[in-house]
Image (cartoon, rainbow over all chains, first blue to last red; front, side, top):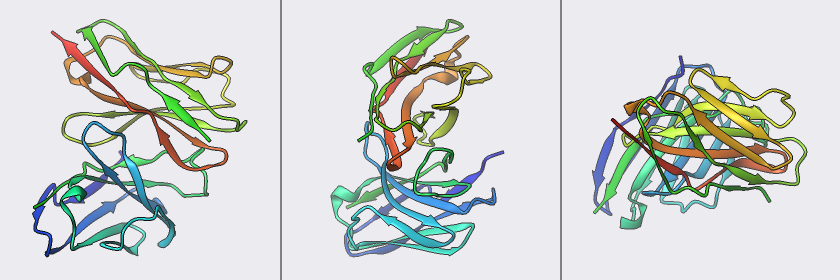
Length: 117
Length: 114
């Protein structure tokens, strides 16, 4: 069974708050991803971690700070967000990340719905 | 650059009938993979099926099958015997080759009517 968990499910924060999104996978995968998804749009890649090292940063503003404490955990630290950052944040994992997505099926978590006031 | 096109913003199907969701792609890479994901209103992206560009046979997973026509660059998803729980947004995606990330289509919203 695939299992990627995310907490919290919902988050409301003010523009001066600091919060964190958490993601955990129990599949022994070595690659983890953060995506942002606006309503009625496909997900947009933000970050990729491979073997606990940041491999890809899609020019994401510094108010989003990812962290990969170990191979099972991925955090996204949020600080001084803007209302336009309100979205569904999805975490995903795959067996590995080789620079191409050919063989690596990504399994997603349930997401965190973030509202920035 | 890779591109995915889903031309059906919305589709309706009666329960127990089959439905085909269209996906065409464009790439100059000889090696690539095609994926279908389902996203219910709850938000989770659920992986459904994968087809590699060199796979000779069409992929199948339970009620899901992928109609892969390489010459036409199409990778349509066929859902047999639709169920009410199939109502969701469906995304076609492509990866591999020169692209370092998945390219998603805009999605098709499927509604299954009782």
